[in-house]
Length: 170
Image (cartoon, rainbow, N blue to C red; front, side, top):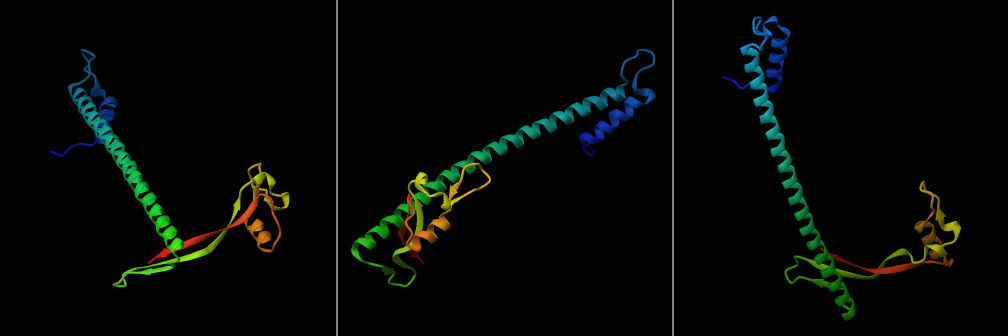
């Protein structure tokens, strides 16, 4: 015997309800076939509900696991960042700019003040000519324009170029 789907059972109930045999002519009660089809439909619907609830619980468990894994990843990433900062700081303090493994499996290289970026330390001081007009109502500083001006020797109040070291490990 094959299990009937909820859809098939619903079709059967609809067919029986629209037929002349849906109700007993003498008593006016539902026919035994219709009662059996309704009971089977209710049982199948209850099983579908239970399955949905089970899958909902599985989704909640997966989301909790994802959050746990994301938190664990964040801890590892932050530790890696601190270790890189620690290594770069101590290489700079001692004047060491390159470290290689004895077996050649890796190399660390420190580039002193290699990267430069614009830092906005007081947005209120930035002149209007260096502000963009984005879709939100408030203008924002254009770091690209400010960077060009600072590199050309123009003073831009509220902004400066900051140089940072870069550590590469390969």
